[in-house]
Image (tube, rainbow, N blue to C red; front, side, top):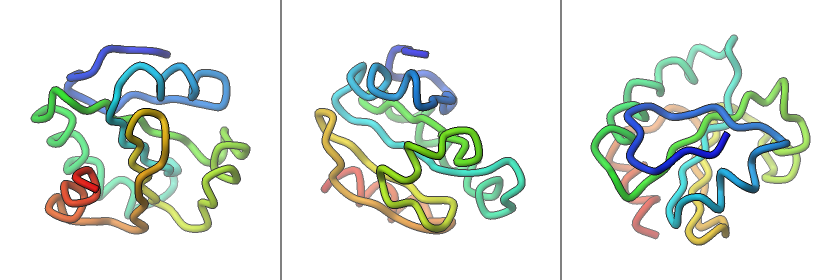
Length: 109
């Protein structure tokens, strides 16, 4: 599911497409979440705004129930978990519903 940066909403990715999605943009933010998770849903408007406002960033959503391997690979133990990547390498992680300022600080790492 490779798409260009600057899409206005986070896109879903999974075990099969993750590597290609990660390679499609130099700066990527991935939210590990579940449809049943209230804090994950509460975080979504913030991620929508970040995706809309930042043309230098691709934002993806990983459903931990469908993509166990990815969640395990990145040590996801609680959701939502945000993992930022620069040039395909993880640069930082946040757990829980976070304010935009903390997410933006993570992306500057």
